[in-house]
Length: 99
Image (cartoon, rainbow, N blue to C red; front, side, top):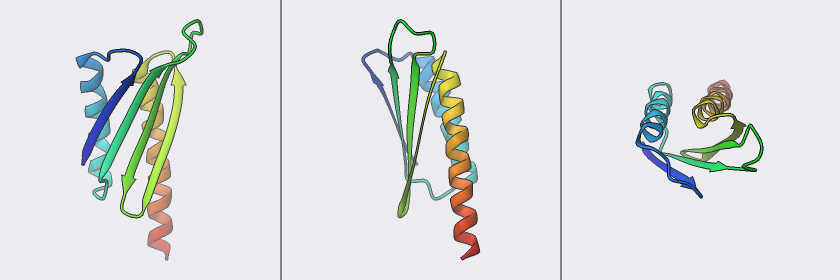
């Protein structure tokens, strides 16, 4: 699995990238078909309280999954986005198994 993290219009910290790497690797434990994970972090509307946005795209053979969340912190946004992706992937796997 390849992981790519991009921070848009700011420099992400080593700790944040390490956190994202650790969380994203958990997806691979449950879904071994993951080829690529792309994480985009950006600050939207600096005057707002919830202005940290995380967008994550997960690529698997023949299908891509995408989720995006905006929260108070990047860690929270990444957690919620990965939860949404987890649900999407599980739903897809169940659908494929039923066929």
